Length: 95
Image (cartoon, rainbow, N blue to C red):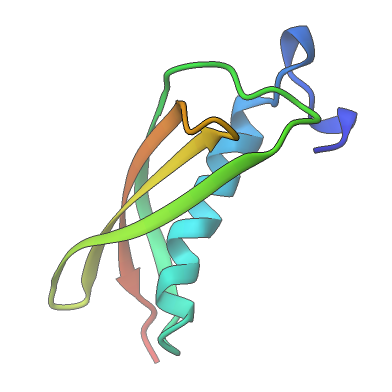
């Protein structure tokens, strides 16, 4: 991550972290050919995300009810330590 995304103390800005998590969860639906819109996300910042180090971003489906989807996302450091956890609700775009 570039330093323009830096928050305090050389860590990634929390708004950028939330955007990365949102994008990862939305991409799950895009892989199936049906884009979704974010209804809400909740992000829990457990540890600061350092700049200039490898991170692992993983998104997983939780459940689906009609046109609504719930997703979960984590960010871990290279050692596998959990840094950030989030969940989101998404809905299918009207066509």
